Length: 339
Ligand SMILES: Cc1cc2nc3c(=O)[nH]c(=O)nc-3n(C[C@H](O)[C@H](O)[C@H](O)COP(=O)(O)O)c2cc1C
Image (cartoon, rainbow, N blue to C red; front, side):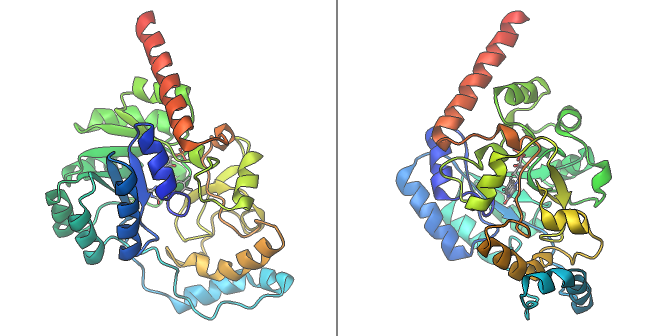
């Protein structure tokens, strides 16, 4: 979870026996090396490094100017200046430099969001010994990922928090939910399927296994743990989250991602045809976000969360992971006994 997870969260889940992930999409090579070293010094557990692999769009000044115009009323209201630069903050796609980092650090798992890198880079990642995972939001994406050599597929349902991993289509209206997606992906591929989206307790984990998943990936439920890096404003919003408060929005980055509704999503509408291409939409929001946060408001902040946000718990990530596993094992063995 880029921006929300770091070494402390990775170590906590690793201690509980889960696969630790370090989100690398917003880090540079040196930061990745430092974080992996810190992890390895404290854990012998397996480690997943997660990267984005979008194709960066060229900066389009007209689109940025139009976007600034859409947001004009907010600059006036908050008395802040429009940003002078249109350069997006770091969310670089996986490339040569990160591939060298992977080859040197040899994580057990490398996972991608938004498809896969070039065949040449993917080959090198696989040759480093890493198992390769990537997110699919449809059966077609899952089949594509398997054909390109993915070792396991993360089936990311509509409920999931954060960015949708979608890469073969752009229509969010037709994205399937986890309950429908997982068994269809399981039927379509031969590699293991990891269910993601809306899974937040032992009931969800058991359901995912009943649908044929070999594992689960959980994000939102960890956002309230002590190790989560989300801001206090984000935490406060999560504490009051209800099932009907999240929406997919492209306002903060240019790509659809699920987060808690806030002022800018309400006023503009969560999806805007005017938002510049990923990842540059957030540049225009940055001064508004900073000014509002100074006033203690998350009106312009991305509050990533999935539809099961209300099930997130304030506790240590290690204990949470242990409890999730215990709950799921109890439920699974109950089902097996009932058979
Ligand atoms: C705050 C947040 C940040 C996320 N960042 C990433 C990321 O950097 N890379 C990625 O592959 N998925 C990311 N995701 C998506 C998760 O990997 C996962 O698919 C999702 O959290 C599962 O649904 P859930 O949130 O309902 O548990 C993020 C999700 C959240 C909530």
